Every structure is written in C-alpha cells, then in structure tokens.
Image 1 (cartoon, rainbow, N blue to C red):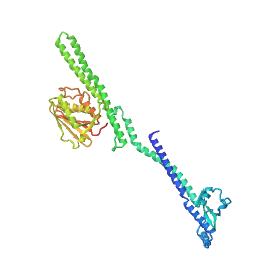
Image 2: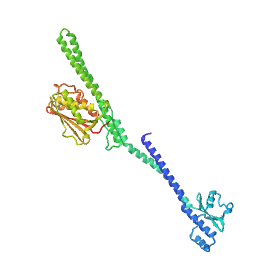
Image 3: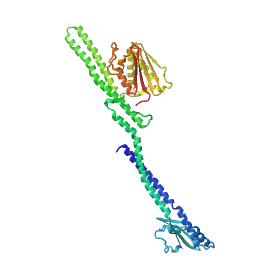
Image 4: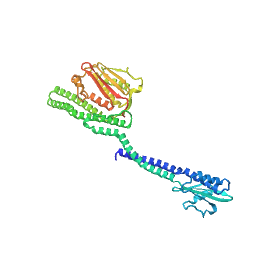
Length: 453
C-alpha cells in the first residue's frame, strides 16, 4: 500500500471516529432533553388532576372547565388516581418498574418512558390519606423527531465518511505531489547526466529540504564520478611516461658501466623521474580523496580572514620571492559572517593551490587576494599580473593533467586547479575564472555561509 492510500485510509478512520463521537454526543443529549417539555406538560396535568379530583375547593369546577377548554388533551392521555395502600391492586401498567413507584413514595415527581409512551406520577396526602396520581400519554411528534434525527445522523455519518475518504484522497495526492515530482526527477538522473539537479522551491519545508539534500548528494556523486573517470583515464598515461623513461635510463646505465659520467647522468635522470612519479602519485591520491564526502577530516568553524594569513605564509615558504597582498577593505561589519564551518585542511589546500599558481605564473609579481561577503556567500578573489590563459584553453584548465599552451616554461602537472575545484564543490561552492593572455588572471572562489554538515 502506497503512502497516499495509507494517508487516505487513516484520514477516513480518524474522521469516522470523530464523526461517530459527535453523533453519539448529539444523540445522547437529544434523547435526554428532547422530551423535557413533554414531561413538564404531563407533570402539570398531574398537579391539575390532583387539584380537581382530590382537593375540596369551591374553584374546582372552574379548574375543570378551564382544563377542558384551554388545556388540550394529549394523544392517548390517561389519568390514574388511587390510594397508596391499594398500589398492588392498581398497577396501571406492567411496564412500569418498581423504581417508578418508589420515587413517588419518596415524595418526588417520577418519570418513565417506554418507546413513545410517557408516564409522570406524584404522591399527595389528603385528609391523612396518601394518594398517587399518575398521568400517561403518547408523544408521537417528539418520538418521530428523535427517529428522524437518528436517521439523519446515520445517513450523515456514512456520507461524511465517504466525503472524508474523497477529501483525504485528494489531500494526500496534493501533499505528495512535490514528493512524486522529486521521485520523477531523480529517476531521470543517471551516471551520464549527473549534472542535472532537482528544482528547489522557495521556503524551508520538508520537501525543499529533501530536494536540497538530494542536490547536495548529487554534487558529491558527480565529483566522485568525475574524479574516478579522470583518475582512470589519465593515471595510466601519466604514470607510464616516467616509468618508460626510468626503464630506458636503467638500460642505458647498465650498458655504460665503463663510463662513469654517462652512468651519473642516467642516475640523475632516474632520480628526477622517480621524484616526478612520486609527485604524480601524491597528486592523484589527493585528487581521488577529494572526490569523497569530505569527512575524512573534521569540519570546524574557521575565520576565513585568519586562514588567508596562513595561506600567505605557506605560499611564501614555497615561493620566497612572491609578493602577496591581502585586501581587507570590503570586510563586513559583522565578524560572524567571516566564519564558515568547513574542512579547514581541504579548503586551505584548495586556496593554496590557487594562490601558488598565481605567484608561479606571474613570475613573482604582485598577487592580490581580496575577501568579501554578501547576504548568503563569502567570496575570495585571487588576481595576478601573469601570463594569463589563452581563450581556447580556459574551458579545459579544470581537467586533470591539462596545462595551458603557454605554460611550457613552468614546471607543473595540471593537478592543482582540478583538485581545488573538487574541494570547493564539496563545500557547495563554485569557482569563476576571468583571464586575458599577457595581462593576468582572476580566480574567484564562492563559498556559502550555511554549512552542509
């Protein structure tokens, strides 16, 4: 049974319970109070009958005349008057219980109903004699109204349950429509189109949170898939080249055993290629690791302006001649906007790669690092005055092992920017790049202020 049917069934059952309780409440109090007026009319006739029949009063004829003229007779109305000592001989109806007579003997007005036939009785003491006056009559109108009410309540109950079932079905379908849309959209996403995302409605309800959670998961999956594909497609080629060189140099060194100079050159070549191989392996492992969920290291609240100082110090150690200027002119008034919950080591690695590239490809000219916040994101812009990137190469610079056509004079492996992109995407961020060959490059990193973990 799907969720819509479960919700509809539960809604119908709850509605049936509530309607039945309400109907029972109405029926009970209607049954209790519907005949109150009729009982009072019977009790009035009990008192009038006692006045006319038992009391010696000169006005009794007038009472009898007024009673016959102005007090209508009730359907099947009968009046019974007898002494209490003769109660065993004058039981007026077998349906009357003993409790009815006991209440009369206790001095109270007694009532009883059998179907639509009503009884009212009371005891009177006249001339040291105890009398009992009982009046009975039918109330076909009130009884018929009560039967009509019962029929209306039963019909209303079944119609209401049916209506609640229909309304529940429509309501459940309406409420589950966003979930069905999410399921429909997710079914369309496959390995070859992981770039697709679910539409996130404005608001903070559960459906919006579910869609956003799926999008976050898809971001991580896309990063992992791209990392895996890049690793497989590039690792074999990049690893084969230094291994081929090493094998060739080893053979050369073995043949030149009588020439120490050639052997030394071969060993230096082997050492250089081995270091290159180690660097490639380290880069590949880092690239592969960045494609997972980012939880290999703890996430923590970090002041991004303080992190930039740490990055500047790290880059200066590698490039002592580099000139890095950090621009704090656009810092927000609220210091809390500078703190992000991130994986510090990964973000530091990503930004260090970007700043290090800016220093390397600008021949240690001035590199400007500016930090700025907006309503929902924090941006870090790295601007250099270097060689720039040809327009035909910009679309490929985030591909692993790809290097721009004008970088032959600089040592590198094409791993830094792809690695940085993976790390930024793990943090739901993005990277924008603007470059002009011979003038310089600006890379802007955008990170959301809200954490995904």
